[in-house]
Image (cartoon, rainbow, N blue to C red):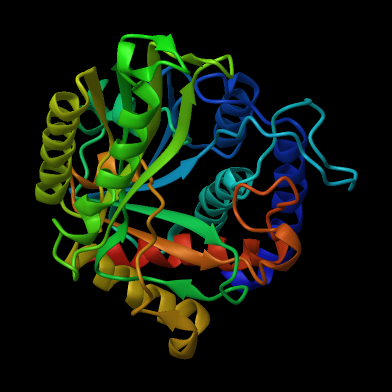
Length: 392
């Protein structure tokens, strides 16, 4: 039995499973139905199953031969708190949440790969252990961090870890595998400005939280335009500004918030320090009190050389060298696969999902995973196991 002989039938079943997952989206750390489905599917095909990491996380274990090497393959399971605007039969049955990022497809493809490896038996030529990591709470809540903190790598030691994300806008079935930074680190901040309120017609009797806030918004842009190396990518975005409730009152408080993105830990430090410095200066200039809350979020996702080499070689086998992309610009989006690849060397690739026209980009209420790429995803995972754990 070879992979090509049964893959079309397997991919069709996995597409049905994927659509079931899409119809029943679950939010971060609440993926109970999804987790149970994953665990049951793995058990039904003979995979050793471990549950409970990060609450709803599932890890499947498959060992062949006597080799001591091990790798991890990771898929995310959670959905987004977003109302779905699609009308197809498998649209979300739960108002206000949907799979708008393709985690339903990621989960389904990894289940398909596990089943394919079991079907292949000894024809899947590898020597060692593969861990199938089904992670909760990728969207903003850091389920990857929680799995690591709860002992993922102590319980399941591995030398390399691999991740995959569908990518609208790239040709369906193409694979992007770039060494180095691929996803940005994402921090967030909230700035509270406390002033002395006054009548808007007599501003000299108080201090102005809104004026101080406006100065802050302007000054923070200099962190990127004037305090950061032009060749070092960074973003500082103020995304909310709340103050006041009446036309004739200078409010006592203004609250600003936003996000900071960068690719290097040293730059994260510099941006945080620069933000604090600007807040201190505007506090003195405008005679207000400013409190900065700066929260470190996902670290940058950095693809290590060895696993990236393995991923590229496998991608060339699976989709052909002309469909392997190695020099795309990294994304300023963030990904908590970074918590895993910060501990062991990792590679995170993008699998082309096809055109993104019509609002079908990630996090769009019109998004849907492209079932036509399921075969490519399964084949990539299977060949990756064989390449990374090839017998000595």
